[in-house]
Image 1: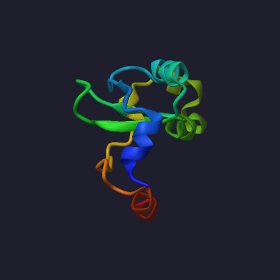
Image 2 (image 1 turned 60 degrees about the horizontal axis):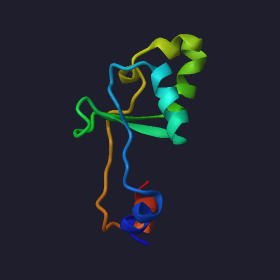
Image 3 (image 1 turned 180 degrees about the horizontal axis):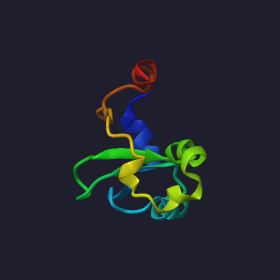
Image 4 (image 1 turned 30 degrees about the horizontal axis):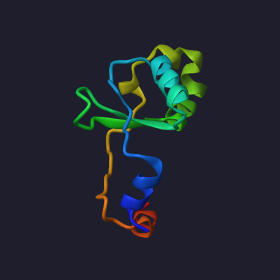
Length: 96
């Protein structure tokens, strides 16, 4: 199966958030769109990072609920790997 087929089923909409927005705002967007991760972008076109529910959970033990008022940039992953629509799901699973 190719990524193109996955996108055809799931849709091609990409929800983004600015790195200066708060984790609280991030949580609202995750809930609103019923997704587990967002692309971090200042302009909606260039990828600055990715942030997921797991990034929040990992910070809770050290920061407590104070993480909610932290900027997304403080918890996001900046090393983002991407693929093309023609890549196979199997190849991506092997790479991960």
